[in-house]
Amino acid sequence: MVQLMENALAKLAFAMIEENAGPQVSREYAMRFLDEAILQSAQSAHYVEIYGDNVQFYNQSLQEYLAAVELKSVGLSHVLFPTEYENAGFSFSNPIEKKWDRVIQVFAGIERKDAVIREIQQYDPVLAASIIGSGINVSDALIDELIADQIERLGDEVANLKMGAVTALRYLGKITTPSLIEVLKKSDNPYARAGAALVLEKTADAAATSVLISRLTDTQPAWLFGVMVCDYVENALKAIDSLEAKEAVKNWADMLLPHLDSEDVHVRARAALKLGRIRNSIAVPKLIDLLNDENYTVNFVHNERICDYAVEALEEIGTSEATRAAEEWRRQEKSKK
Image (cartoon, rainbow, N blue to C red; front, top):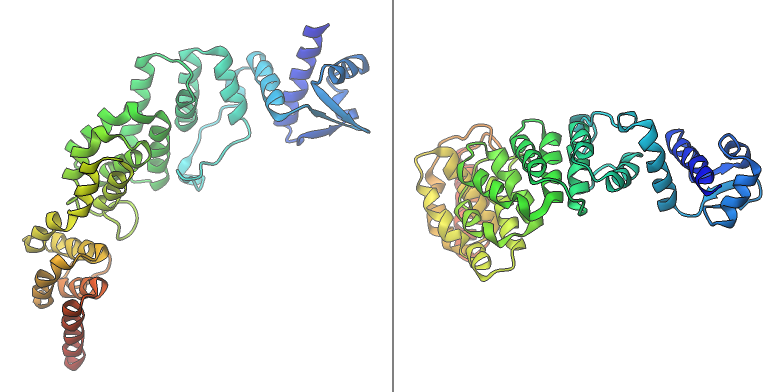
């Protein structure tokens, strides 16, 4: 009788989710899967609660478990669909939970097979990573495969695909650090380097401290308009609880200063912009020198001259010396018009 009851309840639980019926259904709806005797037994055993003519499961976790039991009969492919992150408004800070995600997670916990996770991975790598990150044991080979696939996506030109990869790697945790270190050391794709730093901001693995410090001068544009790789690196270092990481961020201006003398106009522009943002007065003399640099940048933040970035940086730094120089430059510029 118990097995018959659980089988019937599993079908009810599955149907309620599939048909978007909500947490509570009518008795008439429930009787599509149960008879009166099973319904009463289910109530007595605290599987369901009956409120007048309405029926609901005792709690959501129980419903998800029973739906996962039915999923074993229906087949995982019935509830897996390709996740098109580029069309989903996806955000790694607030991933969109789909209606079957929790049931699939429970199902994976029941089955505990690599084949199940691999099938999920083909459709939704973020979900697969979250399941592995929750503690389900899978083979090292499967984890390596998932990490490699998501590392490759970090450099994708589609922003939401990158964010999906960041989220998947964040779920996997510190086991991703060796691969992320390699990206920061060797990748020529600034999107990939920025993504690696974003993952490390979440995992806060001190093992990556040295390579992150080496990227504090990485002023290549990445992801968001006007944001540089070093911006993400800074956040990753701030998340690491070590004296070495804290000292590196504190002394960041010293590392950026030589970039103001670069022959590359875009490197000079990005260094000026960053030095202004961190408001370190050590850069003021060199920034004042750049007020005479009228070379143009192209497609960074604006199509502006180096001197435009320099004056904005001086105004952000805001010391008396910086402010005087910026005000004098603006007066001279105004007189030219």
